Image (cartoon, rainbow, N blue to C red; front, top):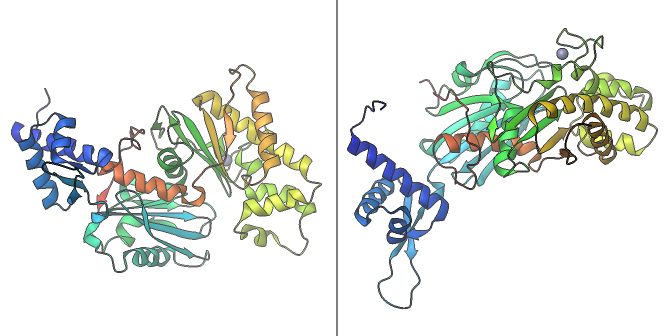
Amino acid sequence: MRHRPTGDLQYVQQMNRRLVLDTLLNHGPMSKIEISRQTTLSPTTVGNAIIELQSENLVQEVGKVVSPMGRRPMLLDIQWDSRSVIGLSIVDNKVLGVRTNIAAEIKKISEKKFELSDDIRSVLQSVISELMDGHDESTVIGVGLATPGILNRSEGEIVNIANFPWKSLKFTGDIMNNHKIPTFIENDTNAAAIGEAYFGRGRGVNSFCYVHVGTGVGAGIIVDRHILLGSRGYAGEIGHMPVELNGKKCRCGSIGCLEAYVSWHEVISLLKDHLPKELSEDDFETIVDRASYLNSIYQKGDVAEILEQVSEILAVGIASLISTTDPSIIILEGIFDQCDEFMRALQKNINRRLINFPHDKPLVLTGELREFAAVAGIVAIILEKNGFLRSSESLLETNYHFDIQEGQQ
Ligand SMILES: [Zn+2]
């Protein structure tokens, strides 16, 4: 048996406290006697756990049970607003942030656009300050940032982001150093997959892939309700999955990568004869709502054939992903998700590549949370880490090992 540093009595008390808290998270508000019945713990044990939880401001009395006769026991419920969580994400050219309570209800949203020449540290700090403004910082149980790029998770560091000028940005050290709050960073696509798994299209779905196509291409892979990370945390980097033997040169230095055919930059260069002549390449890089822009180009006509070819190559990449991970659905977000014709062509081309698959081929769907998917994932990770996810939401038995660090003084 594993040695436990605490005494058995203390361990049992902790387990009882956990059981009472879980029962209230999932079935509250309820009376002590109902908790006792449901957990099969004695009324005294439940009472002691409640006293402890009340002293931590986690549980409160919310009125009496409605009953026409006899004693009316006090109802207890979680103090949902007693703790808060901050989720941030770098989405295209803005920082999006939310503050939620422990029921994952959004209490405040803040977003700031930035130029590549801006100091991203001060943009992040200003979003955090706005979310904290007038709020007791001691109630914040975690701050997380979802970001593209190469990450050093254990240091809370963004090593670099392709197409962004920043190098070695330390979220934990540089930005959160004045706060005593546990912080962490996570890949934006993984975070978005977790967000959709808990709160969006992936809720209750056992296995699915979240694919994002934009400046880069990436996937967050959920298999049997586990996020797939891999030995280096690089699982899902499908942008650099080879789709052609002697193909186009990719910005990573290799050839024939998926990204070299389907990223925003590549699609725009394929469509250049059909785009307004007065716009330069740089102008296209700064378009914010790329999905609706691409859809408007499609509606004007004459580009169907070009986009059909793009969908064929994207289908090769996604079919490979499907063959490897056997998802129920694919959630596709990014530049193509408003273009119904493209989505139909993609589905047809994926199905063509999966001849030996059972007849119910995975459907390609859009997400439900859109640009909030990644911040929702960050919130879910922090809630789960702190034991506040309700069981209806706790389907993702994560194998994540986050390096949540205390912010340095
Ligand atoms: Zn590549």
